[in-house]
Length: 90
Image (cartoon, rainbow, N blue to C red; front, side, top):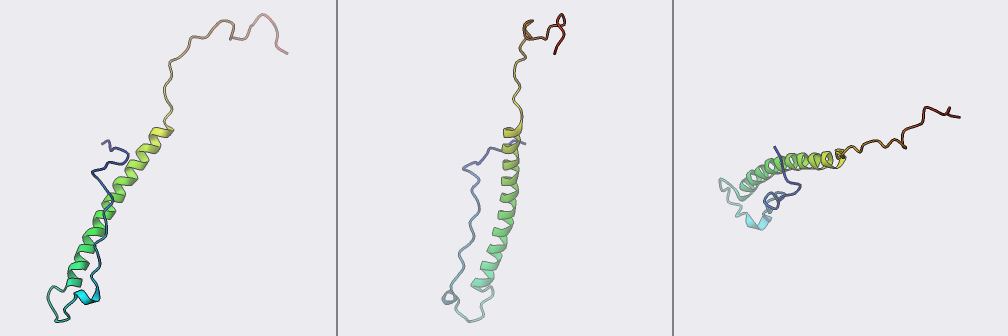
């Protein structure tokens, strides 16, 4: 599976906005606005963990591409580049 380095269509999830204490009516609603926030925050944490796993895979692929040696065409050895067997080396 090939993933692009950083796709624009997969941004890092953003945490939900925490409600202020004044946003609660303090009448014992079920669910309370803070219960809804806790549920949304749980979904955010799961989405963030999944995104971080995808991002780690992307980074590993980028690192593998950077470290992978590039194949070069083999050049034929020229006769002058090879050591001569006629003369003893010193």
